[in-house]
Length: 209
Image (cartoon, rainbow, N blue to C red):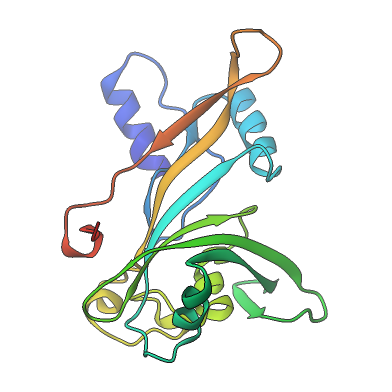
């Protein structure tokens, strides 16, 4: 993505196509991504992403079809929203995630809300992570809520067309970050910028109202 955007900028403007990455999405996940054009902007944005209170993220997700006695359905009978904590340890490319603390693990917290149920028994969820650990939301769903995301065979989803295409049904919908240089009207703080990416119009994102 960084190389593609750099190439596009070189063709679209007279300036250099210098692009820096400040955060990441898993290859199988879609949605909004922020890139920086200067080293100073990249440093300030990276610092913001390291501070959970400064960056707001909202993702849309769709789970595998869930049984009537599933953990998520039981949670939603009381209230269709909440917070889940998964304990995660990253060993190189391997991710270990559990619902209880264990040696070397750090907590990954996620706020979740049910948007609705689909006819096949899958759930539509809104997910907001605190921070941004690798596979944070994928394990929040699969381990914390016992509701793997569709296509996410790494965390328990069944093999199907989505898995064959390498797709996980998780979309970065809204990202709000402090602008790296612009200040607010009172000049006392960095101006907050909110970016959004509407999901595609294929069947998975035609959400029930």
